[in-house]
Amino acid sequence: YGFLFENVARMDAADREAITDALGVRPLVFDAGLLGAQRRVRAWWTNLPSIGAPRDREIRLADVLTRPDEVPPEAWGEPPAFLLRTYPGSTRPGIEGGRGQVIRSDEPKSPTLLSNLRRGAPYDVVVQEGRVRRLDPVEAERLQGYPDGWTEGLPRRKRLELLGNAWHVPSAEHVLSTLSLPVPDPRGDSCRR
Image (cartoon, rainbow, N blue to C red; front, side, top):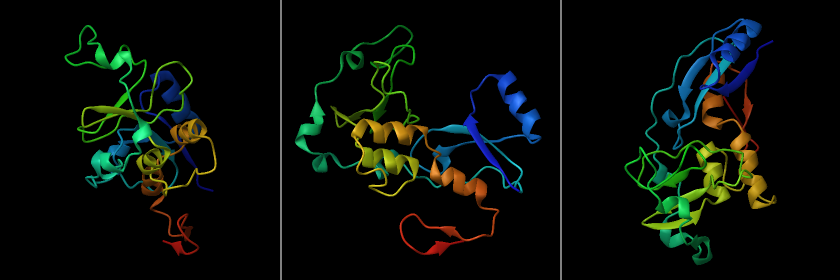
């Protein structure tokens, strides 16, 4: 049987070695930003044939964000205070000590989507054309490689939490691409190889 195990690449070295020893294989480490619009460096352990890191598909954040003229007016808001403060050691306003993150539409890639939305720091703020809004769940689905509406029917916060905990679909597809079995296409009834 084949297996696939994924975790953050910036884990403690002892933990990484423990997983490597337990599974008997070294991880393939690459950034999902090569396959999508989100920086998400992960380690993938598998006993499937090795395929190496993927080639850059050159997908940019602008490719997945909703255009500003299509964002509902109620989605825009005032910038949170943390966006307006320049912290020591930083050259631009933003985040202090990793207590949140901002998706800046002028950057080529989004920071990693996170699931810990309840810790008091916003992880879903989008700065677009000098204005501030919250990340739409459909945009989060796109960042993770899921079809638009994949998490529809759940509350917004739950959708973002689930997507932050999910595998990045194009990365998993890359690692599993050595398999020749048909894989159900989540966008339809057909199978693809």
